[in-house]
Length: 206
Ligand code: DX5
Ligand code: ZN
Image (cartoon, rainbow, N blue to C red; front, side):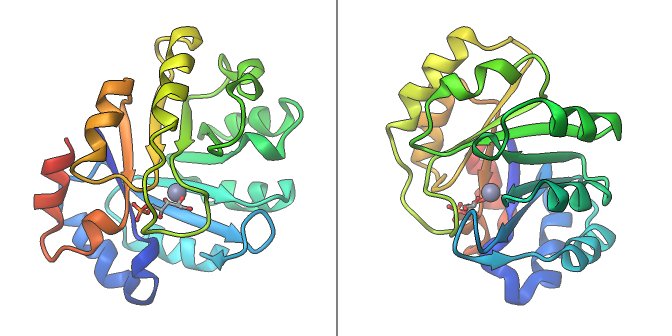
């Protein structure tokens, strides 16, 4: 199981948290960008993500909870490993094609209440699907178990090389559900960053 560490809850101690992720075996550093529109919160402006990229020794997995396509393009200029935006904000392939043309891997995130039908037109064109297992906008929420059936249904129809990731409320218990659902990757925030020893928590999720 690949582990991407969200440092959202450590926003006020970001440098320290990023360094701790560097010292761990984490596969990616997950950055939660929020615009105050798609979600109420506002976090990780462009210059902060640029600074994080400078300090991070892990590839960045940037999760954009934003509406504006122009804003998504701005974050793409930072050239993260993965740029994930929400299926709820697109109607066609334009943005996916644009981000791919820059050589960035594209992820599509889907909210807990959105039907997987929305993903189907794009599954052959993206690298990753990020299933939200909480309502986006904040860390430290409880894992919504209904996402497990949704992922299982999606796995039946999705291309076999598409990476399936889950974001929100992942901990030592709920990671078992993610494995059962057939996920390749989990995003975990508070479960890891609330601990002094990040590596211990990451190992429990693998
Ligand atoms: C929620 C974010 C998540 C969140 C995960 O909007 O997308 O990445 O930070 O945090 P935990 O693991 O604490 O639920
Ligand atoms: Zn996220």
